[in-house]
Image (cartoon, rainbow, N blue to C red; front, side, top):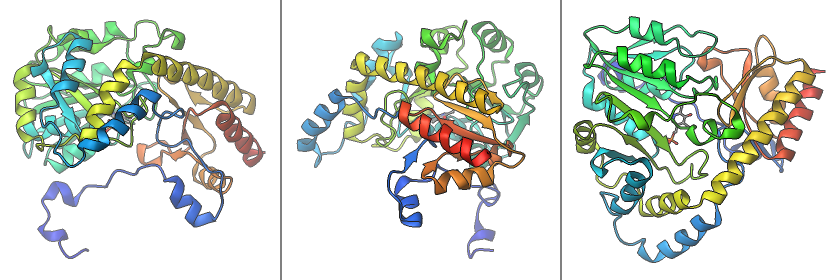
Length: 370
Ligand SMILES: *Cc1c(COP(=O)(O)O)cnc(C)c1O
């Protein structure tokens, strides 16, 4: 036991930290090899667009100053984009921030937070850290079982997390089911709809019939919060910026616990520029759709089962235990993500990369599994 373990609050004692994808530099150090590709953290393989580069260079002059703690300019852009009031926005150092703030604002020890099996790992972490009780509902076909989630609501439920699409399964919910769920949810429970992969899932080329934009429903449901991020399709994971949209009263609570300068000035400027760069977003989406089809076709020809995904990643079943395959891929210089911590021991989650990266990954899988 470590020195402070028995002094830690109970939720922290039981907490298992988030496991990020292995950084490229770490694998370079370990194996002494070059040419490593990372398909492990659902990052945009194109990187950020040129407009972001330009504003970051310009922003250099301002680095000695604190950022705008209210993020006025970025909030103005976000408000216009979604047709919401600026008072409904909570900016975050990544969308992880609002996902955490909502729990810290609403959940006390003994309160319950509902999420699905195989759902995003931040949900149990923020729940336990706040002393809340996680209530995990079983999945249906790898996705959220909304009936089971509704049935799990008790007077002590404060928050329900719904990732649409979900990471790491890539499963998604259509408008009719999700809206029906919100209509049935009692007002004392806040539904958090995590739309980290919205730009990918909503692209017409992805072909998801009825994939909803939950931000359109904010006026109908005061207990709805929707999160978005710049980490995925916008290519800014390293800068850490995202946001929550909610009823202004909930945003007010979250902004009380938000650290004053949680979004830095480079991130504020880059996020605004990224929102304006529709060409780069369109290209990112096109690369993803093509890469997704490439990976699916490759898995099929290898005879591997995969879970059809609405995001920029796909979970594929490679063995009863995927870890040896994960490690063999590492030795080939390819970093993917084992998901045994999501109760999916036979699966690897592979981020959609550039055409040649996907090809390298499929070729390596073919020779490892041969
Ligand atoms: C990547 C991801 C996020 C975004 O995290 P950031 O803190 O915005 O980088 C949120 N939810 C899910 C389900 C994700 O996969």
